[in-house]
Structure formats: C-alpha cells, structure tokens
Image (cartoon, rainbow, N blue to C red):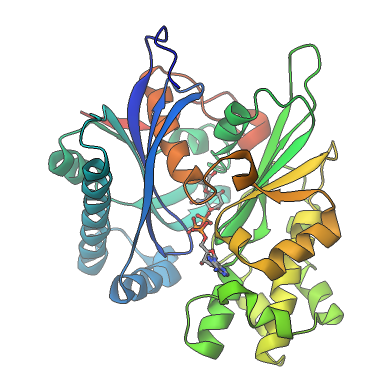
Amino acid sequence: MADPGSGDLRWAIGLMSGTSLDGVDAALVLTDGERIAEYGPALTLPYDQMLRDRLRLILDHAAELSGSEVDLKDVEREVTLRHVEAVTALRNMVPEIVPEIIGFHGQTILHQPEKGRSWQIGDGTLLQEQCGIPVIYDFRARDLEHGGEGAPLVPVLHAALLERDERSVAVLNIGGVANVTLLGPVRGGIRQIWACDTGPGNALLDDWAERHTGVACDTDGALASKGTVNPDVLERLLDSPYFKRPMPKSLDRLSFHGPAMEAVQGLSAEDGAATLVAFTVEAIARTPMDVMPDKWLVAGGGRHNPVLMERLRLRLGNVASVDVLGWDGDALEAQCFALLAVRYLRQLPSSWPQTTGTRQACVAGRAIV
Ligand SMILES: Nc1ncnc2c1ncn2[C@@H]1O[C@H](COP(=O)(O)OP(=O)(O)OP(=O)(O)O)[C@@H](O)[C@H]1O
Ligand SMILES: CC(=O)N[C@H]1[C@@H]2OC[C@@H](O2)[C@@H](O)[C@@H]1O[C@H](C)C(=O)O
C-alpha cells in the first residue's frame, strides 16, 4: 500500500507497444519514480491484423523512409489512437483514480544506435489532446545524444522492484527482442547494474510460425515441442560478433532477420522452431557477464512459451517467471514507462553508462503539457 508520507507519489499511466507489433500494453501505477507504491490495473489492447500488416511494412522499410510519407503519418495517427483507446479503457477500470501523467513509448520502427538513431512513431501531442493528461515521450533520444545505445531502459524498474533482494539476480524480458538486467550482489548498501539486449526474443520464431502456420506466434510452443534442434544451424546463427561484445549493447527487431531466416530455411517447420528457440536461449546464456546471477527471472511474452522456459531452465538452472514474485510479467514494460514519466518530472536519471553506454547519467523523456 501507498506510504501516505511520500509527497512525490503520483498515479501514472505507462504505455508500451513492443517490437512484436502485437498491440498496446497499458498500466497504471502509483509511483514517485523510485519505487512502485501501488499497482493499478493493466491491459493489452491488441492491434488488428490490418494495422499489424501496415506497421510491419513500415518496419521492414524504415531505414529508407524520411518520416514525411503520407502512409507513415497515417499509421502513426492510427497507432496513437489505439493508445488513446488503451488509456480510456484503463481509466474506465478505475474511474476513482485520476492519473497525473502518461509515459508514452511509441512504436519502434527502427533502432540504429551506431548512427545515434532510434525511431519511435507516435504523436505525443495528439495523445495529450485526446486524453487531457500531460505526456512524457521520446525516452531514448537523450541517451543516444550522449553516446548511449538508447536501450534498454527497463533496468531502472527492475532495480527498484528488487531493491530488497540482496543476491545477484538477472531479469530477462523476452519480447520480440530479448534483454537482460543483471543486478550484482548488494555490498555495503551498493549494487552494480549492467544491461543489454541479449539477442532475438520471439520475433524470429513469430515470423517462422506465421510463415508455416499462418498464426502470428508458435502458440504454447506447439511447433518447437515437436522439433529437434539442428546444432550446425544453431552454431551458424550464433556466429555473429554481437554475442561476444560486452554489455551494454542493443538491437533492432530485424538485426538478425535475413541471415537467420536463411540459416533455418531448409529445416522442417518443427525443427526450425526448435532451433530458433535454442538460438534465443543460447544467446542469453552466452551473454558476457561480469557476475553470474543466483537466479533468473523471466518477464515478457516469451515466458508463456513452455518450450522456451524449459530450455532456459536446462541451460541456466534457477529460472522462474517474474509472476512468482507477484509481478505482472505482461505489464512490466508499460509500468516502466509510467515510472520513467515520473522520473522525468523529478528530473531523475533513467540510464547510466553501465546500462546503455551513455557517457553520463541521463534523464529520459520530453514533455507535452
Ligand atoms: N501462449 C504463448 N505461446 C508462445 N508464445 C507466446 C505466447 N504468448 C505470447 N507469446 C510470445 O510473446 C510475444 C509478445 O511478447 P511481448 O508482448 O513481451 O513482446 P513486445 O513487448 O512486443 O516486445 P519487446 O519487449 O521486444 O518490445 C508474442 O509475439 C509471442 O511470440
Ligand atoms: C529500441 C527498442 O524499442 N528497444 C526495445 C526492444 O524490446 C526489448 C528490447 O528491445 C529493449 O531494449 C527495448 O525495450 C525495453 C522496454 C527497454 O528499453 O528496456
């Protein structure tokens, strides 16, 4: 429950639409930007197939776009309106709560940290006008300006939630892309935090499943559970300098797409799925880490895939879904952007050299009031 003595506590809405292109996650939390004092409701508003298809087309060609294309502007408006709907639905669940701020991530269509660029579409002004609540958005720009990767930003939330756990813990988010936050053991009241994107999450498997079954993901690991990992193909998939690079580092949804799809090309639907699951797991396991965690906690849609979870357990040992801690593993990223919005209001930093490679601690976001 909320600590009534904390003057900085605010109800904040966080909005995240991830690289899976599956829809908008929205969450309401009471936070001072340093901890979550109370959880409100959370929901996912799925994108319809037409919007998904249009987004995918844009994502596939984003590197060639200028930003002024009519179709891009139209999709950006559609995406923003889906976010307005998500805010409305969330507010209707708890009409007695008045949110003071919205943290709006937007939809990433291109992530090129090596060029100092990360492109999220979404119209913050339209969202603010439609919802009547101040909006914080453009969370990755300042980090990139200071030489950082612009991602991942979620470590600040993981660290806040695990403040009382003194052991070394790794929190995995397995969405379209997978990322890890590594929290070192607490020593003298201080703990080190490292982070990076580890490799693909579900995005390659989603594309493979869609190609072979027409369904947007390998639901409950149905394909992968019937397949066998092809070790030669797996080693080819892992033959990228990315996996040897030290943290911090980050990825675009399509970073491995072409070569990976080519590598699995000749495999059966089942063996391809099993091999892509193994790719996600092995990339996580091979991430260079200064400290080995005592346990691994898994958030994001990948934790719903039993084949992926079983393989993680076999490879890493102590693995559990974050839900065992009472967290909502589907809402964590949205909750993060609520926390980041309040951190912006208090001008607290949200990324550091060890989490994104930025030269200095950065306050994330830009305000529309
Ligand atoms: N029952 C299920 N079985 C298998 N996979 C599932 C299931 N439910 C969800 N997923 C996977 O989870 C993915 C969505 O995960 P999530 O919402 O965490 O991703 P995201 O937030 O869009 O991505 P990112 O974190 O990279 O931005 C789906 O695309 C699918 O691959
Ligand atoms: C550029 C971008 O949108 N990156 C996402 C993506 O999805 C997972 C992983 O790659 C992570 O780095 C990031 O999202 C989360 C919310 C983050 O910034 O922590």
